[in-house]
Length: 297
Image 1 (tube, rainbow, N blue to C red):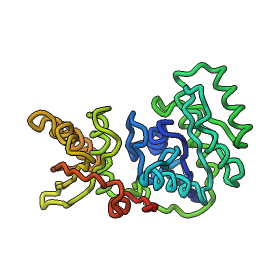
Image 2: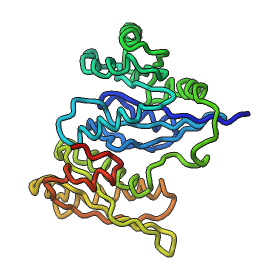
Image 3: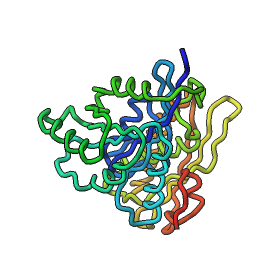
């Protein structure tokens, strides 16, 4: 059989479930998932295999109204991800009744030549009738070629979507080795996993203006991996929140991230975290380069 390979841009508003869907299509975790909106920053690729097809998924940052430089860079990356894609997947949270936030996205998608697939996500907690009405209305607005009803969390409808994407991929040699699931470096992936724990464990206490920077990533003689990371926060008042009483919170964040990394990398991991305050980190050019975003003036 002939090998097939293509690019699918995964678009959607914040918290539509794009990262969960990419992870489900790949079959393992490649993108961080959080209840906090705007957790995807870099255009991480997930690589899914279905039969003879390799499907490269560009998990783009959520599309929204950009206010800060970081926001503008993220939205720019999202639309870059849609360029030259063999298919565009728009993921919509089916539970949301209001759809005005989708208008700018639908308007931009309307005239695009790529094959457009609408994915209504989180259908496991939505009545069927309103789903069909929503699918019809959105299809008319942006001229979608196909509609899929899925629950990325439970996996319902994901195999059918994956099979369809595989069928749409053009003939061509695979771009990545068979066992590679993402084009993110292990160093960046490790920083993303710590950032996920930071959000997960601090919930609303820590604002969105925090990040995790990779500092050192080296393999020890015994095969274990030593990772040093910097948790960057915008204000001194956030330091005690991240550290916790007697350093308990940063220890818990580090322990959870270390366990997940050890599982992912299949080796022992030594993780060292420290906190740095930098009010202007979101304007620092080198941070954008680290996470694969373009520095937008």
